[in-house]
Length: 207
Ligand code: FE
Image (cartoon, rainbow, N blue to C red; front, side, top):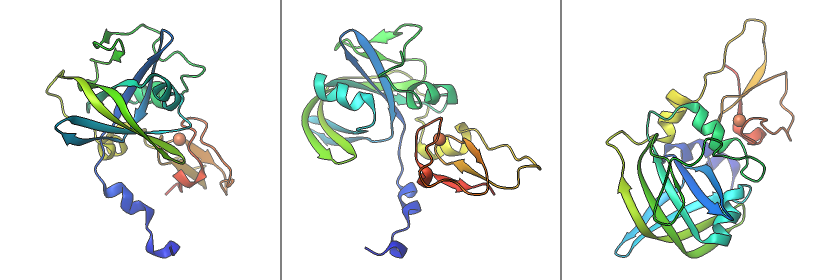
């Protein structure tokens, strides 16, 4: 399909929420940020989560077949996104302070910044090249608070740090995902954001 009839920005008009997907394997607790949790059916209750294969959690979920989805609220600070989204559970402990709460399946629940959680058991896996889609049945679900759910657009408007404008920085590029600023005339094509590990295509020129 022609490049000029696909405006990738149109995808941002789909409304998304933001969630911490928690998993547990061999006594190790893990969590990553996803924006792709969706209810599929109500009887039986099914939810799908799609996880990037570059996330350690994708493989943990594939092996264990169990996870929790924690629905983040608007009160969630950027530090939680840094903690769960910009580091890998393969070499980082996402729970240095311990796990605040567990659901019946033994997996971590994050009551501080979540308004609900649900526990999922994987029923089907669909390989989507870069990502894997897990179609799951719901084994437990609880509302934790009446706070508003964090949407992706709320995150972009209110949570992600704004790039600082410096008079002596004539040219630069900002990461649309985490706000990291690359200073320089041109952004290398193979550049990878040091903070969130997204590629050059997720950068835009500083305006
Ligand atoms: Fe980034």
